[in-house]
Image 1 (tube, helix red, strand yellow):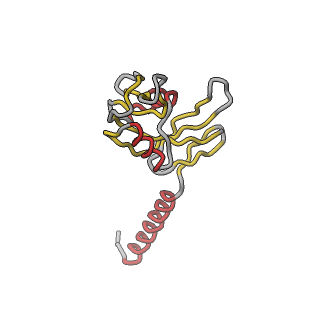
Image 2: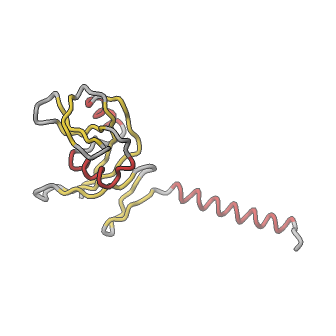
Image 3: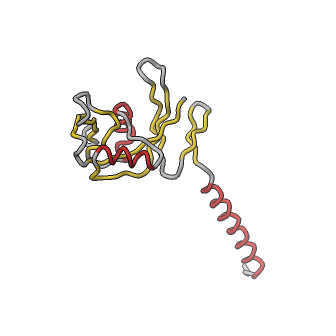
Length: 152
């Protein structure tokens, strides 16, 4: 088989078209398909699931955002989550995250957005080692992950 300059150029053209096609696909937003609805996901986001309130009046999709902080108190964690367009997960979402996305978390305690019934000094957190949820002083330095919600 003889290799010609024209044959090499033709192969280069094919490769350039393939690369351009892959680059274009990578720039397109990703989606999670749910009951025929395409839910857009940004780079690094993961679809967690649907949360429905006990009285079924509130429904939303929960999406885990890619970044996390460590050694952060509750107030700073809440501010950080808001600064990236999210919120700390509530206790129900944390239980769902433990059940479905445990591998995305360190074996550590993470803040929730839910204040503890004991008053303004405490908030709930989730330990991703064994799934335990417990109240902790807001001044403690724990980890935090953010979620965003899409109302249904």
